[in-house]
Image (spheres, helix red, strand yellow):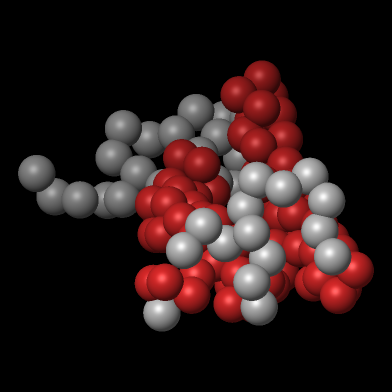
Length: 128
């Protein structure tokens, strides 16, 4: 498998699944970022909607890259064969959805810094 997918888009997809999926997503669980107790409360429905948009955008961006790599599309090429067009368009559409999913909570965070109420000193309610 390593010989087959070496230096293909499979490597790109794998890297992003590990670095973004496993490392960046837990940041959104922080109460100060998802407004569980931060400044002004956003409904759980809005938080779940943003989570769904990010999930769909992330998977639509990077899952087609696994397929592209398995089919042999190399990395670092400015042009690619026509047979890869559909999967590359899917990946681009997913990146647009992912950008919207990340922009929404960031816009809320910036808004809440200016006009929201202050968070408590212990947002998780942990006993000391």
